[in-house]
Image (cartoon, protein in one colour):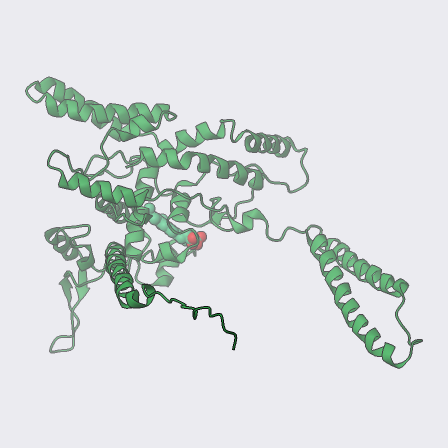
Length: 321
Length: 144
């Protein structure tokens, strides 16, 4: 591959040179015919030398480093397979039952490591929880009050306007608890990764029982084909039957992953349902306006389009002027 | 596809004899995934039991039994459909070339006849890509 690109570049280089040379020849020919026109032999030597340098540099690289293994598939990570997510279709909304299940998975599994700091309790109301459920959930956690008369900051139970609590006090504490790896905030993770939902679903369900033969997995890392570099600090977290769904859905690994990913998609894009409805309205209104404009145009142009231009040639007369 | 779904959804909602369901009807997975045998069994069983339990309310014994079975399945017999589907795909004709390469690589590397430092990550990727690609639509039929 590298050799081929190198060859190609020498060829373009040579042709560029030819162009310059032709130009020089044309201007020279106006002056004298015996100017030092470069012979084909010299051109060939230049091309051969350039090729030799290219090949030599490759050989030197191998001599220095032994093997060329840049941009290996492992470095890139396995590209996630596309799954037919229903909520991503044009005329489909989120499945709110799935969101509810997904939120349960997040709370019971992911929340011990990952924050979801951009999601307030109030946004859960009506989409995932009822008001009372959301209030009860908020009240389970304590938040700082405003400073009181003596400037002391006290604790109060959470309100709907509070945001979901972080599992760790700060990033340093999070790293310390996870062998130096920082579990990223999941609020926007679906938008923050190539492959979005497909990637995260594949990541969560893609841990093989054991890494393929010969693969090296760093200390404290786990083999996951979808993670670029294949060594990820997060171990497999979802196992069959880990949560008990309130609606009785069998909690297989892939079911939980699907639900939590749809939930994370909602967290990153809570406006999606509204956005699609607004898009529909725009389409309806603009198609009506377009139809209207076509009719108005027909009306306005009617006199022009329906006129008839008649050429009435003068009567042929016997007399010639 | 999506557009006509929307239209038929609207019509369904408007007609008085239609049943409006917030979720996909329960029997879809069992029918449309003939490939998933083990999962098909489990889903079909659980799905079949639900209506049965609801219909035979007076017969308390039957209901209790059904519920017990259901709980058993929920707790320790959950089989991940993704695993079974992908296993089938890995062994299908479609993925035979990828699997052949992978197996050969594993034999080479574990047998010590491969190049120094060789690993089977790339072969693994090809096989995984093929298997997930083949299982994806089937999996979505089974999952809720």
